[in-house]
Image 1 (cartoon, rainbow, N blue to C red):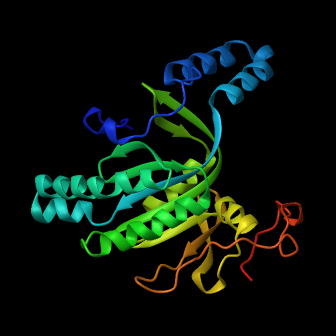
Image 2: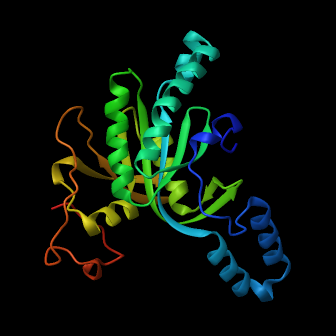
Length: 248
């Protein structure tokens, strides 16, 4: 996958000084791990310290790109993608997002919290509705391997990244938002999910079946609001990591 194009790199927010978490350094450490199995624990500790950060990761895929390219030609289809990027990348930044990859009709970004990622997703769908542009979105949450080049994130690896891609690119249809189970659980730790806005589904991935949660987006209708719970309603240590959080 290609990194953020140079012509659009000014739209990506800079990050803190690099900790040496480059693609080349990751490859070097992984090869060293292969060559020195006796040092695996030490190398893994270096990798965790140097590369791992916790984020909500959002994967957005435009709907109808291939059909548009067939009907109107690739130039018109790519022009539509450029229009979408120009609208959305600054919006992502206003919500604290860091765009790390623009790939054809996809946008990849990380956010500090699931709440921010979900809120921007709702606003994206609202914004694009008037432009007759339709997208699908997947959101994950967890520890991610963050790659940086030139003061900007340029790539991300991790289980939640893979799942968010699966949800946003393959499962979600136009104007749909899906959260991984871990992202939904993280949301539920701080905010009570509105039951009428969520549907739990089971998604087959390879030989596994995972839980995902569809957010029922309604244009100009009822939306998830983010209000704090009292500690008596839900405490983090009351959540069993082996159980699904259901909306009340």
